[in-house]
Image (tube, rainbow, N blue to C red; front, side, top):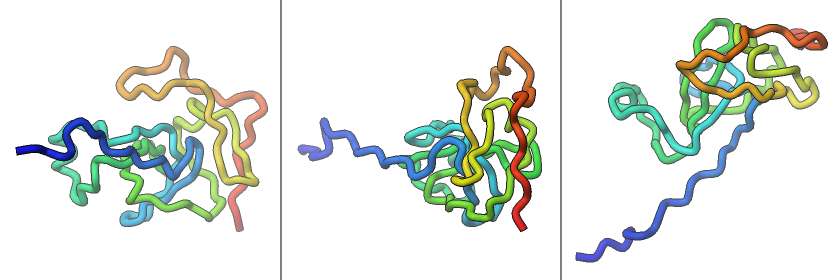
Length: 138
């Protein structure tokens, strides 16, 4: 039997979101800033099987610093929408991975600190001297 998919790789979906953009989870409504992404799901199969919605693994997945707590989530692109509130994201690692905020584009400016879960960075987080958090929107 010939398998017509032999030798062909599926075309990876283009990431919809950029690093530093603020997104909202469609189902759970939490907001957060995108700190990194994978072109496909890199989580172990047991983690994926425990995920209640089990979205397609063959799409971009994003690491998100969740607003208002210390949680980092791993979310499929199909579960995210753009956050248009303009409200800042409050998370303890914002200053570690971002060097500022572009208020006009509602986007944090990603610095060069690598995203490497499980391995702490060489230096503790600190606010850049010229970083001013964005004001809350009305």
